Image 1 (cartoon, one colour):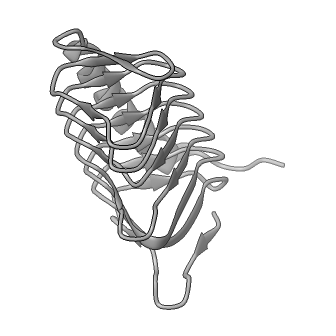
Image 2 (cartoon, rainbow, N blue to C red):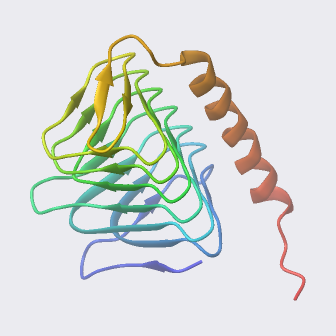
Length: 172
């Protein structure tokens, strides 16, 4: 797997985390226990840190980046769907970022909030705990997130990460 230092900035990967061989980590990327990063994902922490909490996952083809002075912080038990783009934002515990969503600078996604697939969260948007964000640009629907969906998804990816860490092997 391509894991790169950028000057003195080096990724810090918990030994229980899973990083697929086709994912790319650059710079100050910090992966917590039982987190996972899947094929084609790029985490580039050149101007600040990317912090991925315990049991969180970054799914296939997603791009996680930072802006100067704006780390990207993904707390525990968070799902980042396929092809999502996050930059200089915070996603709190049990948040869910849907496939193809874009989450920009200074956005805060509250605990248990859900960002629907293909949603665009513009700079400085606040998605309260338990809310659903949907659309381009996003409309916020308080209390409309499905907490059970996020919990099941986080648990699923912890088990999937363990399986891949133990059983994945290249055959050609």
